Length: 352
Image (cartoon, rainbow, N blue to C red; front, side, top):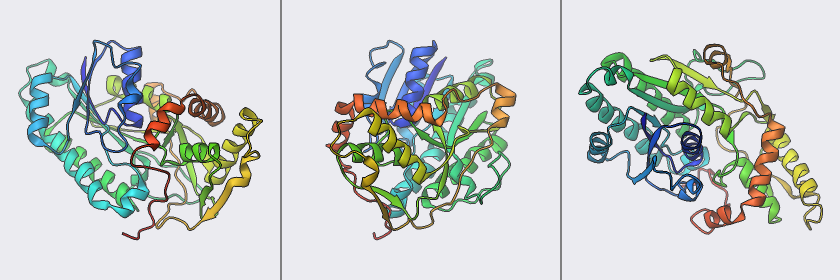
């Protein structure tokens, strides 16, 4: 199978491509604009594979997307390209509207034009797999789980843009019969994650003796999904999912943000017994909460378990330990990232 993977130089996209190249026989065309969070260093382990190709393109460019489909002749597309950080969406929402909404529309049209001209049986076998987030569902109270039938109630510019893209994908299926699949995932973590996100930011700040900023009281709850578990799930949905269906993917790992940071500190204390910053918990500092900060996300992943047989292999404890160890062992990767546009500053204050 020949696949286009958009956003393949990003955190989740690169994990998907590594999985595809290392564990399947599929051919992959990585399409990425290489914005601040795109990093080809995350693909060095597969970059020399004859089944891997890369094209630096913007998904908003309709001509480029149409030409890509015609020249590469894919059997499916996995669409992960997106602006993805809530804090950045507060400061610069226009970038999220452009990439996540206009970009998805552009891809859908390019895919539709290409798909309609395919001969059978390739036409019936084609898939447009849209990868989204649980944040489109809004915020949960103390109880309950997000299911595939939950109403959409996005509360940030980021989640609103992803909700919009989800609706576009649904509409292109119901109106034009484009064979689509949609997945909504919980918070991902693991190696190769850009350090603006909670877990890598806490790890790297702790290594450098910097403050560990906790929004509000740190009581916001997220369901954590190890990125390699997510990559397996996405490939399974692509290959076995039912056209038109949505599958929620979660790690069954609800954690308060403060507990996540405490556990990171404990792992670092153990792995770095001679650190001058030990105990790393002393670096914790509480900062003003993020505007519109959703209290709790939690995914009901029973549908994908029941219908496709997927379940996460990592617990939060095993996955987090692997993640901390990865950052300790791959300083060159994250140092190159930090030499660029992001230096660990606070984003999302809504002052712009």
